[in-house]
Amino acid sequence: MNNRPGPVTPDDIARLDRDDPLAARRSLFALPEGVIYLDGNSLGALPKSVPARIAQAVEQEWGVGLIRSWNDAGWYPAPQRVGARIAPLVGAAPDEVIVADSTSVNLFKVLIAALRMRPGRRRIVGERGSFPTDAYVAAGVAELMDAEFVAVEPDAVADAIDERTAVVSLTHVNYKTGRVYDMAGITRRAHAAGALVVWDLCHTAGAMPCDLNGCDADFAVGCGYKYLNGGPGAPAFVFVAQRHQAGLRQPIAGWHGHARPFDFVHDYVPAAGIDRMLVGTAPQLGLLALEEALKAFDGVDLQQLRRKSEQMTELFIRLADQELAPWGFGLASPRDAAQRGSQVSLTHPEGYAIMQALIARGVIGDFRAPDILRFGFAVLYVGFADLWNAVAALKDVMATGAWQAPEFSRRKAVT
Image 1 (cartoon, rainbow, N blue to C red):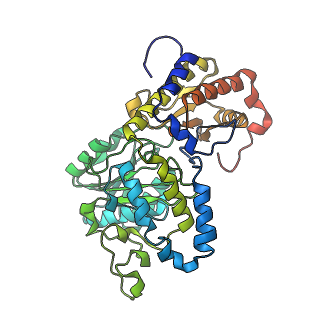
Image 2: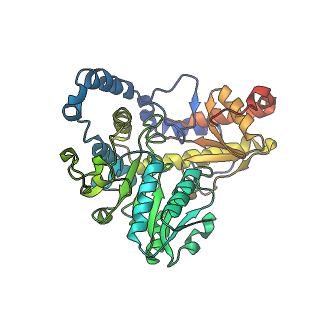
Image 3: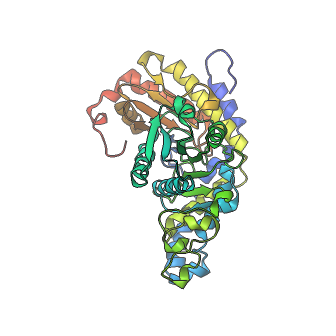
C-alpha cells in the first residue's frame, strides 16, 4: 500500500482486494462464516482438501490397507517427501529438509550436533525475548554438554559472537513483536568467528521468503501448524545444509535414522544424508495432513506473498494509528516493513480482556503476556477487507467499553 497522505478509505480497501494476485487462494480454505481469522501465526486455517485426505488415510489406508500401507500407500517415505515440499519455501534443496518430531526436539538435536562440530568451543549465543522453549532447550543442551548459554538483547547479538562461540541460535521472526533478523548478516558474522548458526523458522516458513542456502545457513527448524496450515500438533521440520550432513552426529539415535533400519542390528550406523535426523516412527496422520495442506502453496510466487504481507501489516498499522488513537494502544512491531514478519503486535495494559472481547465478536487474534495483542496475517486466506473490519471491531470494543465485562478478564488456559 502506498504511503500517501490522508486517511485510509473503503475505496482503498476495495482496490487492494481487487488487485490482489493471491485473492483466489482464499477459496482453498474452510473459513467459518462471520469469522475474521488473524491467528495464522499460532494455528493455520483448515485447507478444504485435508479432511478428505485424512478420511482416506483412516478409512482406506489404515482401515483396509492396515500395515501394508507403509509400502502400498507410501507412508514410509513421507518424512522425506513432505520435507522436499517445504524445501522451496525456505530456500533449501529437497534433500536438506525432512519432517520429524517437534520443533523443540529438532532444536535439541541440531544444537547438540552443532556443538559436537565445534570441539573446544562451549558457548551458545541466543537472544532475550525469543520464544521461551528456544531458551529452555538451549540452556538444557548447555548443561548436558558442559557448555554455556548466553542470552543477549537482540541488538547485541552480533557483538556477542566471538572466538568462544560454537553456535548462534536465533528465531528469524520474533514471536511477540514480529521483528526480523538479518539472516544473511548474522550468518556471515557467525561464520567469520568460526561459529555455526541455527535458525528457528516457526514464524517464517509459509509467511515470507527465506533463502537458507543463499545465506549459507547451517541448520534450521520450524513447525508445520502455523503458516503451513498442517493442523494442531502437526510435525515439525529440520534443515541441515548438505555440506554438514555426512559428519553430523545428532544425539537421539533411533531406528528410523539408521542406515538399515529393517536389519534390526544392535549397533547404530547413521543413515546417509538428511535421513539421519529421523528418530522414531513418524505420526502419519499428522504428516499426511501437512502434506495435503502444503498443496495450497503450489504455484505461489513467494515475492508476491511477501509484498501482500508487507501491504497488510502496513495497512493494519495505518488503520490502528487512524482509528485507535484515543485508547492508548502502542505498537510493539517495527514500523519498517522490511523489519517485520507477517504480523502486527499492539500493546495495551488491558490487552487480554480486549482480545477476549474482540474474539467474542468473531475477530480472532491472540494475546501474549504481559500486554501484547497479536494479529497474524496468513495472506493466502486473509483479505484487506478483513483488516478494515477487524480494526472497526476493535474500535467498537474500546468505544463501548465492551472489554470491561467480567467474563473477558478471566484467564483461559490458552491465551
